[in-house]
Length: 110
Image: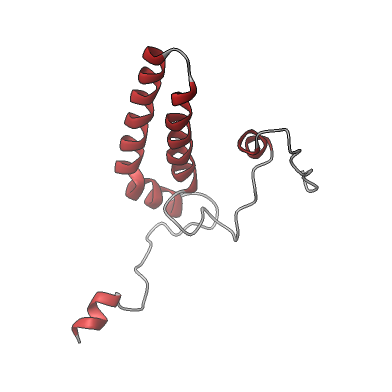
């Protein structure tokens, strides 16, 4: 959908963005790691925070436990998810090479 309507004031913006996700800048998987993984982490953080509004505190704790496990597992996979995203799919480089500029730490050591 090219013409995304403006989110009504009475509608939660978080739910609106699920139906009309903003376009990511530039081509490819994105500038940082693997955006679906980042989305998963951010969604889990949101879910974790929202559980404090639930009346059933035992159920809320179970949901928080799952959210915490998801955040941890996804965080541990970021490097591999990034490598998978840049080495597969159209236009991907199956053997990515490091950036030609030296790392800032190496410049400071000179």
